[in-house]
Image (cartoon, rainbow, N blue to C red; front, side, top):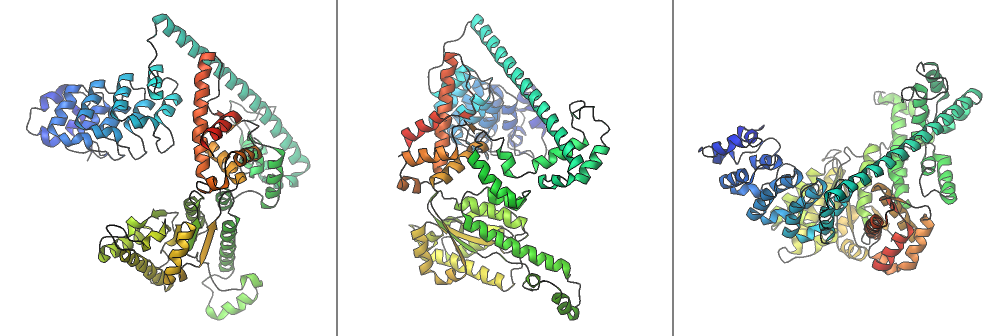
Length: 603
């Protein structure tokens, strides 16, 4: 259903109040459009007056608690589109719990208000309705304060409210003018630095391209090691009609030959990409050079494996399955299925021994993941779904994570039905059962036998798939949990244990591995570290400020705690810099930030 007449009227309001007196208005106020919006959502999005909102709520009182297709309540829409304060106050009076509701992106109404320049009065209403929302993060790890600071046009009053301090006194007209001049000057300086940096990069690129062209003329074979086909480059150079005399750009755009070179640079191994990283060091260059020397240009599977820190035994397993898959595919290409069976033996005898095996494409075995909290069990399982799909072992890159409550019902019949439904939903991908040992535990509502019924259904499905009754779409099952609990669970469930031939132990991360994970996490969140914060320095700091027992209880979560604290330190430095009138890079984490967090929060 598209927008109804009432949806459209909510965008103007004048005729809506007249229509509210008609009998059909009550039924229209409860209709949804194709985006799941009520007319109340539309009215909040178009800054309707309190009178209009009141009329819609009287016609459909449940509208205040009705989410749309992305989980937004009307109060989310009002906060996002700068609705009048009276509108937000009315919505909160009808449904106070609305201030605590997250949409599908994990955002509260306060997140929406902070990132969309809502008035200080509206922000204060939302804070008063749900004070804890000041410190809660959305799915991107951003608090309302983070979102407001990211928006350079956010008012100082709103920032003060989100920081939990009294708002500053209202500025005089002269002070406001001075503030605007300061912002203009800062913007001019930023644009100037960007222009200078762009000019330097253009000059560097021009020199690099000229050097590559000279190399192509004298030693074309040497370009292969850089991932560039000299024949392709030669054709591109001959077709470059828009090239200027200096081998640069014309009109600011690269020509065909330059695109060939730039594309090859993008495909280079991480040792080259690491050279532009702010944490580049001689040590990292040596490590990268050793890895790059044998692997050449990276592919999708290796990129996925490279994103896993440590866990070499799992990477070796995946590479082994990859080799077996490639051999099976090569054998099939040399001896197609169309070859008659009578000639198959003769054809196979001509193949090398490694290709003469008729075992076919390998199947991934069901697995057991064992490790302490935060050691990467779930993250690795997600990557395996993508990796095995790239290798053609799984039909889909699907990953479904479940726990006891998703498999176990109140009766054996409900348990079987829920287990079958989960297996069906995970078809073609990976089914990850977290804390699998709880299936053998009893709860206040359910006995342990209920979990045993779920285990029995898993066994039945695995056996049926092994016999070919489930086709080739039965999910790869991974059961995971803490070491001691999983050991006791599998010892008591012998039948289930036989179906899981692979067990992977996830050791606690070392300080060096935690340092690498922290650097990757910073880069993923848009931060970078100062030059002194290398892997070795971060590792030494972790070793000095934490105990092995404390790290074992958290593992990768140590990095999340460290980044969260470091962001707080960066914001603190930024606030202090505004009073001291010097600039602070809001994306740069320095050593003192890390040290302060470790001293205050770690042990």
